[in-house]
Length: 179
Image 1 (cartoon, rainbow, N blue to C red):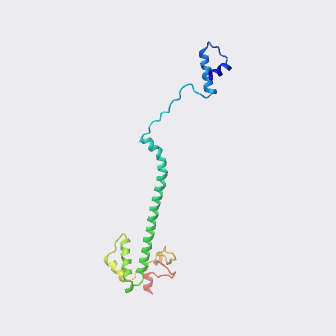
Image 2 (tube, rainbow, N blue to C red; image 1 turned 135 degrees about the horizontal axis):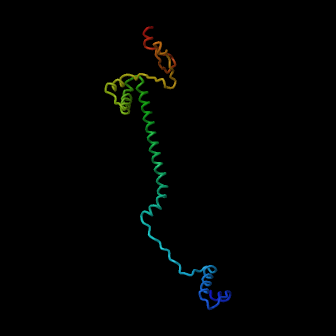
Image 3 (cartoon, helix red, strand yellow; image 1 turned 90 degrees about the vertical axis):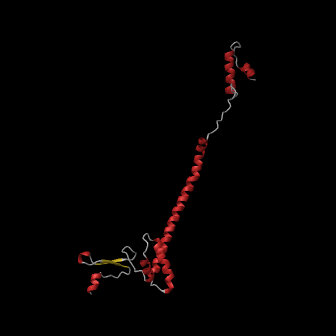
């Protein structure tokens, strides 16, 4: 077919075979889309383990990283929740120990004393435990407590400052003895 096409439209001297081969090859490759050589089969090399892992690494990382972040975040939240619960139990125990002891609350005072002992970095002595079970916990107010008011005189005059929850001034110990 190519030869008949070539013979009809291309006038090449018959005594020039090199020129004829070039023209026929050009027509086959560029006009008809055929190749002059046989197609080269594709050689697929087997992938080794490292190449396979390298191609899977982005997929594994896109799954593993969010899972790790979720796990760490969950553990962090659980730790904070546990800490908040411990603080609430300690507040409940202190509230129970502030009330005067009665025979009805003896078991609760025992529980509150054991709770304070287990949560404290410095363990309570047996005398301290017995005192907590038998008497009310004294009210200690810090100057940073909500509603606390600092009252008193300056240190230059020999007076001292004290904090109260009710806003009433508390006299220094030396001033209360002289009255």
